[in-house]
Length: 202
Image 1: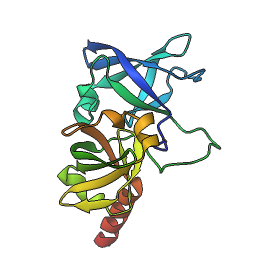
Image 2 (image 1 turned 90 degrees about the horizontal axis):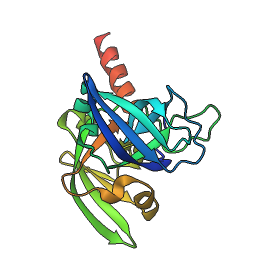
Image 3 (image 1 turned 90 degrees about the vertical axis):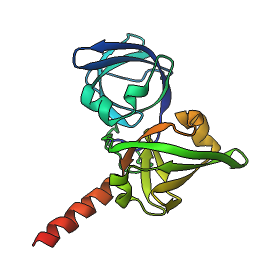
Image 4 (image 1 turned 120 degrees about the vertical axis):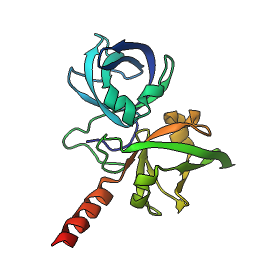
């Protein structure tokens, strides 16, 4: 489980194709991150497992299967790409953002970006058609692992307002028109839909 509050940025330093997918090596700025083999880390919002890490803790590897590459934007990463990183929540940790599973539901596309005031940025993002029913004004969404509030919903697009703090500490600074973003809808919306569907059968 994650919160959607990005801890740090990482840089892809090596990509190795293997028989069943791709192995990525990420360089981070974490200091004493206490990463262990088998730990879960959200990479652009996709929950991945640490398969190897350096003694200093500033490098780690993860493996993405062809299925994971198909469902996320990880296939678009190249050496030098910047990714958002968040470690799984620890028991007793203060909870911010919203409940994020790290299970990417689809890939959204940036339709527009503009600065509106004092380095505050407005984005309109196109949501895949099969996910649009989950979005409401003032609801929550996770894009590339960032917990965000939906400001408005219009014609299959959602409006987002990102403050300078978010822009500086995440890869949102590199988003541009046609950028592909991993999207995870609010898990509560999925539970409600399933409950109502099952209740309708009874």
